[in-house]
Amino acid sequence: MSSASPTSGTSPVRRLSLAGVLRLRRPSEIWFKPALSSVAAVAPPNLLLLALGRLDLAMYTMAGSLCALYAHNRPYAARARTLAWVVLGMIGGLAVALVTASLTRDAVVLVTVGALLAAVQKALCDATRVGPPGNVVLTFISSAALFVPQSLGQIPGHLALAAAAGVWAWLVGMAPAPIRPHGPERRATAQALNAAAAYAAAHGTGADEDHAPARAAGYAAVQAAWQTLLALPATGARATTRQALERLVVRAEVALAAPADTDPERLRAWAHALRGAGRIPRTGDAPADTDELLGVDAELAARPAPLWRRLGPLAPIAARTALGCALAGYASLALGIGRPYWALVTAAALYQANLTLTWSRAVQRVVGNLAGVLLFAAIAPLAHLGQALLVLCCLALNFGAEALITRNYWLGSVCVTPMALLVTEFAGYQATGDLMTERAVDTVVGALVGFLAAVVVTNRRAGNRVEQAVTAADRARERAARLLAEPVPAPGALEAARRGLAVALTDLRATADGAAGEWWGRALPQERVVLAERSGHRTLAEAVRRQAVRPDRGAGTRTEDVRP
Image 1 (spheres, rainbow, N blue to C red):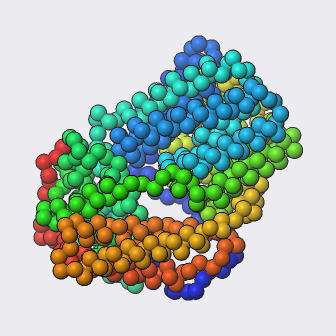
Image 2: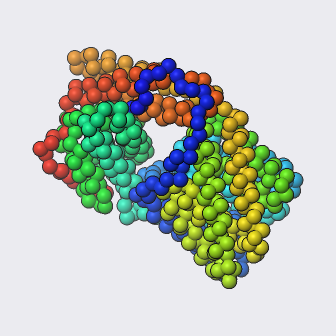
Image 3: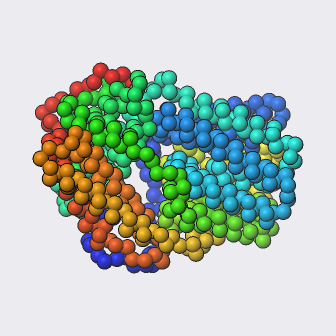
């Protein structure tokens, strides 16, 4: 999967590039869903507060409303649980911030608490893979709440507002379920089929290494589809639909392992049939499917790693977040800025899987925020004509932020920045020039100090995790090879081993890519990575041929009698 030739290691110092950092991507297929959900969750509480003349309480309702941004890629049963945990996490962070604000007005203490909260939120969001927007929204709310004057007697009421808005956000997030109850899993399956088709179509047009990015994208899409389907109930009314989708994901995985034996157009036809609410396509190989789904049952029986074990590898990222946020806030205080939480949140938004990605996010954040400050200057005169216009402008920017952020983070930030500035005016209009200056300075300070903290706190464990991932991939390959050597493997055993190997190779590529973006790390075992990937994919292809599950090029696209 790597385009690099085998080498003994990589340079411990890597160049940070600006190439492609601001390039726009194609929008997400469901870009409008989080955008509409955000507006639907934020608008009613804000309009109600406007009617009551208490727009100054909007920060608390927005804490709950913004939870509607999460879990749009999850099946509805899993989405219900995820949204509930996000709401509880949001209220928990808000409660800590409000209690701290009521007990002290020492800005240094407030920044310190905000930085520690940001580190905890970052670690938990990454460990649970909650997905975008990750910890940034949680940190924005808790950090802002730290600097709002508060008394202990007010806290229950403010938390009740956040909880009520959170319940409404949960309902908004679950609203599409009666209309398209299988929409998320159908989309995930279609994406896996399309990604596999793209790799199969490209295979044979050049050297295999030339198509490594397409193969990596295909395996990532297949793995995402499996994670989506495995989150569904294994029994009950949804089991039949889930099994029909599992067969399609298996075909996508088979196509990645044996692209030469794959008809890309058939995969695309299956993916197209999954759009809307039509019947789910059949693969037409029931005996093989039955054996493959035994492998799915084996995966369902495996228990996930405990949370504490998933948190361990994230210690360097959490340390970066705590240190960077604290130093950014302290620097803002030293400069006399009245809202150090802006610098704190800027630093918290930077930290990605490695230093290279953190650098890219820092550039995107600065460019987007400074452009957003200029947009605020254009919008402020209109928003200051009345509180109703202020709320409507915030809603429009809220929609724009979620609609554009999938194109590139900086483009979404162009809308997020003026929206955040307008929210500060819910309690009363402020001088536009002062707000612009403070936000611009805090953005630059937060990005600069936050990135320097990432440079200082190196991820020394990255190389060890690559070694562990290589070992895991080798073991998975050996297990599959042993089963291939048996005349008649146990039912489902070869399929379970094949997908276990596919998962191990996906994890290996993600781990190697993450470690390659770190500075000052020890040389990575690049040769072992490349050899493990090559031998692993050969074994995958051999398993596919052994199971004789090649798609039938002559068959048409049939459908199973399964309604969404």
